[in-house]
Length: 389
Image 1 (tube, rainbow, N blue to C red):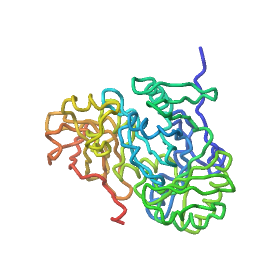
Image 2 (image 1 turned 90 degrees about the vertical axis):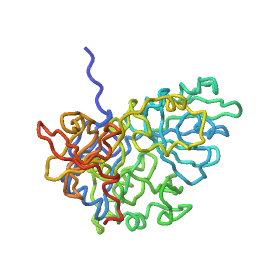
Image 3 (image 1 turned 60 degrees about the vertical axis):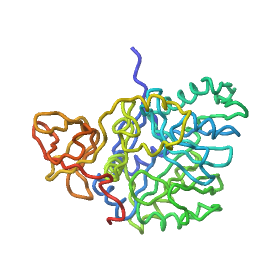
Image 4 (image 1 turned 135 degrees about the vertical axis):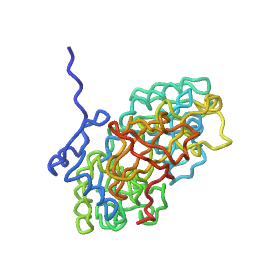
């Protein structure tokens, strides 16, 4: 009998342990759930700033004059229309139009893209790109270094998994601009990070090594994600913590990250996004341009029957619905919760759920919480926006 494969660790595992982190296995990685308390870390991000290690995320470089055309076919968005210096939220769909993963794509140059995928789906994303490279519109050419080339007519696009070469840190919260400005090791940014628009990035150096600073995140707050070589991760982590201490910065774990993204109405792959759901069901049909054709899953999306749709649900009291809990209307089960929690910011339970289309606006829904029906009112997403602060 073979032993189970132990979870992987990021370059910052020892730093987390030194801070007293509680760990869990997440997507095959040993990750910090919390350092002090879920509530304190959540509030730090909303009121000051939090620092997350997201180095478990997967990164793929797509390069070559045909890179944009290949990504237009492989992904749901129109990546070829992005300008250099911008980022875009997009999805990888299967042939049936279901979601394999949601991604962030950065255009680094005319012929160069960075794709960031969820850690648990690194193999899925890599395999899908390789499979699409062998379709009728392209053919693969294996490289000796483990990369593969994708010939989209002519010229070529090459795809390389570079996940292990980099660390990714997320600095999130209203104080993040001031904190980042005091990080001495970050130099020679092509554009001052404070001047970046949302979903934009700039190149820089950190401790003399190439870095990317992006104004992106997964918390609903202003903030930055910093991609650096793996061997610079510890130095950057320590410098950010030191720079942020006067501003109330706290290291934050997966528990706070989950309640933050839920309040912000951001979907989680494996919960709101699965092979059984489409972008439109999740309220994200806009990621596919209305005039876009020729992408994987296109034909199936047009033919799929009407299905449940994602809604926000808000309740009173303290009993929160959790993933898998039924949503009822009278005696009828009309949906299922995908994510739920007692909102630290709002002070009442919130949830996202897929429900039958005919009840999406019903005012008499309830979540069955351990045998008790808790009234739940449909609520527009997001539950929280930083303009409410």
